[in-house]
Length: 578
Image 1 (cartoon, one colour):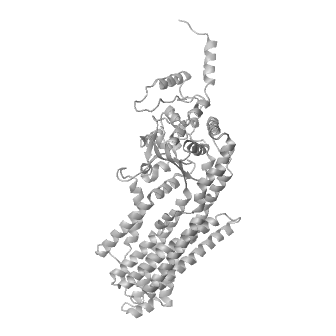
Image 2 (image 1 turned 90 degrees about the vertical axis):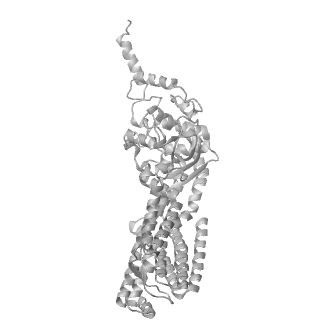
């Protein structure tokens, strides 16, 4: 019966409209935000779940949310959507067990790391929900990944592939090489090339193949990709938190609860792993995750995993693999020329021919000494650019200023500032904590070691494949046992496993030490060339020494192996102290 006057209805409508902040897709989530500059989490504010609904609809939805019955498995009541900054801050480290979800690390790497390579805000809601459905409810998280969506996803996927699968790669490479070796031994694979050794006691032509190099390369690339599809029962894969997969992507209310519940998720995480890239410390939500984890887990593990490390490993491995194929081809070509020039040569004539100035010596120097070191010339400039990021990491932490960190939402900025001030006493205290304690905890291990020692084993697998091909050629050609043992000592042990890691350690040290770019591009490239030439000379010297000792016999090969072992030990000690 009774109707309100038009003036009252209009005034009520104006009041309801002004109670809501202006709509912005960025206020819901970074995964829906196309234009936002903040890759952190920017949900809806003031408890509004559906901006497209009227104020009356919002009130009904919130009321319905509050009247929902608790799940029988929930540990505590679901928190109400934070209507005020004070309430959001007060609940920031509480764990919302109803929404706590984790995803297996191996699942995130399926499809070549599709989850990491995507740009969340460019995906349709249906595709984002597919990522969310990969996660499962949990009571704890093994690894919380903190990263910036501003960084290209393929670098993160590459880093995680190498971090988690380097041992698997080495094992798979070993199995593949052994399989190729057996197939060649039983003549199930052809060995179409010819190898002429340079030994004092043996120089007969030997059949040479390339299958160990091929099988090893394929296994090294495909194994990490295939491991992502193995069931969790067959291999251990830590349960991780990755925002795009563990926060609901369709319901704005659940999304808000998940985003503002990040602090609670961090409190039940065993490790915070920072996939560091240059934009990381410029994103306010990334800084918040560091602050919240250290507050919630004073003794928790924070692992800094700079993406440039695995980028350098991939660069060197690819160049060494390509060079190994070229090297093996030129060895076969040289031996073919020798055999065509003197098909019925005896031991002495073959040996002298292989060392002739016109045919043998030039090819020997090119294939067995110079070519294996050429990747350092190609990679020096690229790696110096990678290690600029390492120095920027230390500088960013040393000169950290919370006021300069970017955030596209004023509400989120106030929310994070209030939380940090509560935890650390003030923003200034937190800044001091980042510049001193956190910097020492995170950066010192990175500065003291430019590359994990385990990665060197991955890097030398292409060279090992080449000299295993030659070892098989000697065995198939009927070489005496002392010649084969000399080859193992001089090339496999002395050169591949000892000398190569030693000069690679020096190479990486020089690229790190002289990473700072010069004022002119010409001088900068000359510096990269100089670094490459220094390391090339060392590599060339090692290869010549290995070849000479192999030619002289078992005793000299043993001396060279011991010398190379001492060299790599000294390089390892130096790398740990630097």
